[in-house]
Length: 241
Image (cartoon, rainbow, N blue to C red):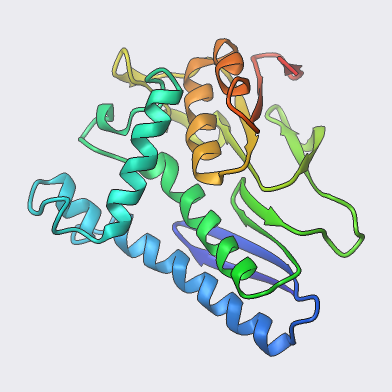
């Protein structure tokens, strides 16, 4: 079963293998997963002036008065800031607190978890480069993801086997949305950064941090249990494999 959902300013695609579950059960699980994504958008979107995140950012409400999902995401953000040596820091963003560098991965991960908890045999949920998966695809092999060449988007530089999560952050998609938290200005030291690991929320944040920090941050990510990382620098070739 395949599906594409327009949400969070992008398209989130689903590939679901129901296994022993009926198509009706798979459809119901998909609807619940999509509801999770839209709820995340309603809660965290900074383009919605009255979203709980926007109101918290302006100081109109407290964390205690906000939906519990905000505290959960900010907990991930604090951990990602620590693990990245401060290169991922939503509290240092221009305009105030901005956790959107982690939210899409977190929401995509939650959508995939709904499918897994509903008994689906396998699924891949792709939130525009932030991918959560479980089980095995129809072929019986591991899920694989191609890493694009930033200079030539139709060219695949590397194919990666993914067990749970992979996140790729690139300047071609994010441009000046990447900030150096230490200088407080837009900037990056890589064209693309990819992180694999058990948590998509954390992989998303760490990929954003690597894009800002560059290849010097790869050992920091690889030191984390279950995580791997690589960046693509100025020339169209993989660095730090």
